[in-house]
Image (cartoon, rainbow, N blue to C red):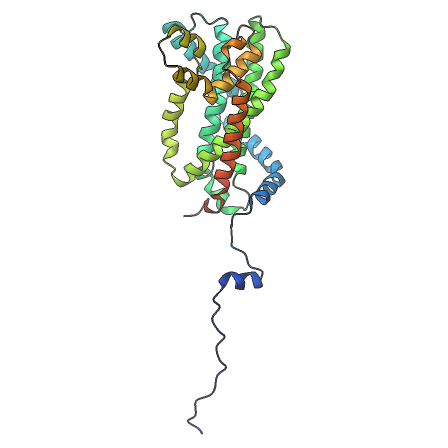
Amino acid sequence: ALHTPPTTAPAPPPETDLAALAARHGLAVSGARPSLPQYVRELWARRHFIGAFSTAKLTAQYSQAKLGQVWQVLTPLLNAAVYYFIFGKLMGTSRGVPDYIPFLVTGVFVWTFTQTSIMAGTRAISGNLGLVRALHFPRAALPISFALQQLQQLLFSMAALVVILLCLGMPITASWALTIPALVLQSVFNAGVAMVMARMGAKTPDIAQLMPFVLRTWMYASGVMFSISHMMAKHTDTPSWVTSALQANPAAVYIDLMRFALIDSFRGDQLPPHVWAIATGWALLAGVGGFIYFWKAEETYGRG
């Protein structure tokens, strides 16, 4: 009897359904992607964070410069001056374009809004990994806040643009109210593309090095420094599909809408057909599609 081994209680059967075990004890996967409706609700609940974060980024952007926030207006104005000298004077793109200075400045300001939103969105995740790994929040808040930051900067630039237009004798007309829906549509488009690039940049940070070349090519095809309709009228041998593609280019669409709203000499016949439908379509495609595309990779951000 002294050599009989002690009896032990039988081991519990192994748990084969780990998901059931976790559910029974109230456990959930850390950082799991929420459903799309829940994700939207979480994002809306943090709208104050998005606004405060974008404003703080805008304030800090030129905090080390002596001129401070003046650079928000001075930078696009200097770009417009360089483009005016190179394209307007040396290359002669101003010929046949009435009110070329307002035409050019409007194009530069509106294009800069899209360009900087996309560039900031590309680095939204990869450039803020400390914040992403330290706090739990919907990651879409980052590219959206960067797009909102660029919208705030554009509004400063638009104030300077209004002064330029008034100094050049442009009257304030009812069409100026069209800038509001145009900016809303462009903002949705920019935020959507920023979210697409944020997901791509989070996985492949080298994309941020490639984007300046892509955006520069896009700018030259968007009629920032020249009138697409005037250029196509001079080159009658251009295939019709090329003309249609250039006019339907989303950056060109939003630039043309702003020019039509602000510049009297920019007439409706210079706009592509169904321009508001095209602008709305691009905004919905980029905004909704980009948001869903970003949300699908929500649980991967900040890992690895």
